[in-house]
Length: 325
Image 1 (cartoon, rainbow, N blue to C red):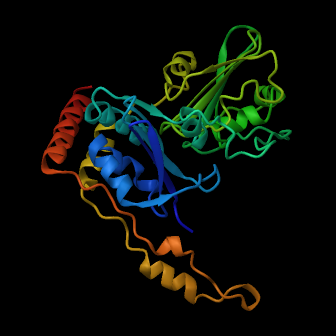
Image 2: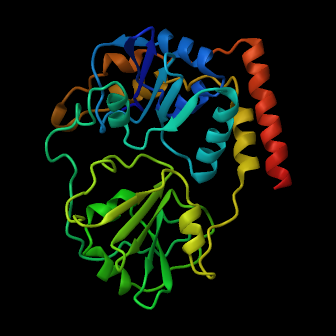
Image 3: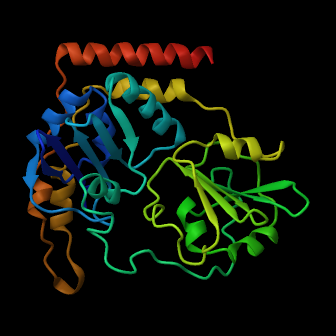
């Protein structure tokens, strides 16, 4: 239970880790007011001496004041919210190199010179033999898989799989994709996409979420293939998609307004659901026990009036620009 977040603050050549049990969904909110407010927020939470791993850490941020680099990742509510967050951070963190940590905790430990596998056991990246392609009848797939056919044309399918799962399935997936029926045109932007070009032996991937392991190329089965990792940039795949399967138009203005509406909203009160959880009978008479960390409320960002005014100015300008577009 919980949506755990890990923070790292680097300053004057030293770094320290912090933890919040309920804050993964609030990482973006705590970053939006800028580096000073975010740093105060992280330091107000619990200092720890260990790393969370890819399973337990749902959101994280590393603020490197020495090099003016921000690394972050958090659960995504969709493409629009991710791109809107990137746009706001570009304005409220001026002069900083703001990067989404696609490799999750691996990007944070790599930045500190500790390697990407510090929290990962050997063989942690699991591959599988696909028995079919995860095509979908829904209009809101997790990702889009596109394929260049031998005649040079491109076909595309909606997929229920996360982007990285297409690579975990190996190149054998391509034959299954070719045999798959068409899927409906998209009504919402997916979380990512994968494009296969068997003739060029190239696979391209983009995502607005973590794709842990993407920097361990070649992944098993993809030897002698080239990876074109696009980060969260969907435009290359957009230019390849057939005319009857385009990406939808973005709704950035609505996402930006949601950020504005959420300013100052406190973290949810967890005492009631925790009480219900501890009061429920456990299996075979077991007694539920609450993790002590779950009893510690998250300390959210508390921007100064100037920081809050700068954030609102950035949001207003971006909303106005998005409405014109």
